[in-house]
Image 1 (cartoon, rainbow, N blue to C red):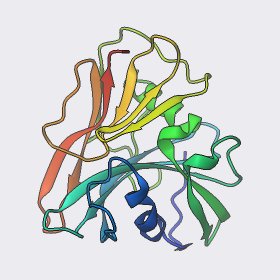
Image 2: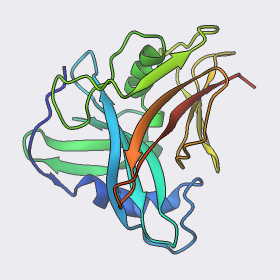
Image 3: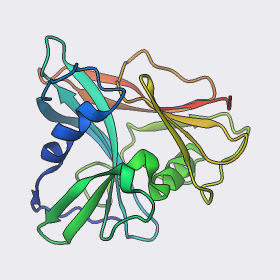
Image 4: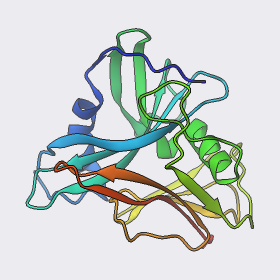
Length: 214
């Protein structure tokens, strides 16, 4: 069980994400735009080893005429993840845990292993800001055909529609829906949860889709 510490991070998560988001192919703010970010929801998964923080975070960007909502799965580690230099968002000083290496979780085996466990009914989604508190609003569904091998190195493809991850030859594709849309739906399975807009409007849709392997 992960313990949520009521403390500070310097720089904080939004400060780390502000320069990083515009470098992503799925960011829709336009060239030269500086995001105006606000936390908007999400949930956590517990690392069984108790070493890695796993956070499915949603942020809204108010830099343009349209409010856009993005999914940013994050992992927090106490040491660098070997071979994941391109996935590093930055480092931050945690008030209790010290230096934390913050990664784009779509590239992190710890997050991918627990995500597949969630889809297979072996993991319980947790409230984002509370310790030992399941979040029943997060719903995972999967038709059960095909399997993933979290032990293999993930093959990650970034595109305008999101981030696709393959865990093994012929395994179903995990698509992280980066630009959140209430209408998004998956054919094989999905993880759905809610988020909110700055005016308080509540929305709900797929964070992750399960797609057939190409």
